[in-house]
Length: 267
Image 1 (tube, helix red, strand yellow):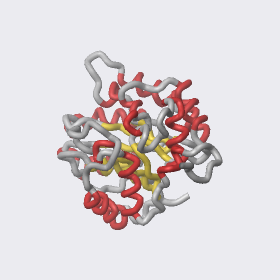
Image 2 (cartoon, helix red, strand yellow):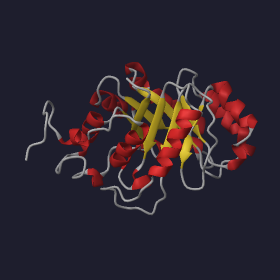
Image 3 (cartoon, one colour):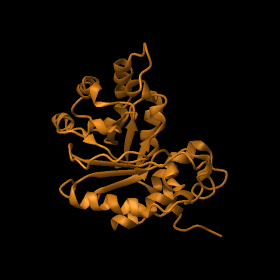
Image 4 (cartoon, helix red, strand yellow):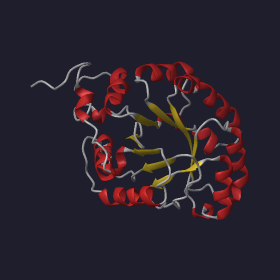
């Protein structure tokens, strides 16, 4: 299947109707069409609201065999408000993923912490690491520089939790290999508000990540890489550029607009 699993952070964007999905495409078809082009996706919506088991079953049924989902853990776990039962939310979230685990479609779950989460809260990190079963692939995104110590590296290695190699404003984590896979996120600032085309040239950042994959992660067989719309203005187009930088076959974005079995677009 190849080393690189490349995709977008989310698939349900109205601005993609026209440049990616055909005009008039209902949201119920977005995921099925997305999965004709890419073989993985990072679920951004799970950060804001845990998906129901029914919804997860729909996702599993809407995608082909071999597709992989990476899901953000709900923010009530990583950004808990006072009185929130974060561990209870985590348990219910992990339980809801049974359809993906059973079908082999779970790529990873991601603990995405805010920049305000600092190493003085190491005990809370450990509690969450211990609360995710070891057979669930786990990635951890840390954004504050206080975490870049050998103690953190060993803490992640003991759980085989992958440190996310984030390309986000004001964050550059060290390229540690702490798990059995690599996980990279290409996340832009919030200045862009329309997501129908490439609007920024970030190829240099993608090339820098390729060098890390080749140098620091050369012995790792599985690499997940995801871009959001804010990074370059259009998630699918960004993944095209990323694939090109990595020497991979460029995804054929026109597949999202074709009918099942159609070999070319008409007109």
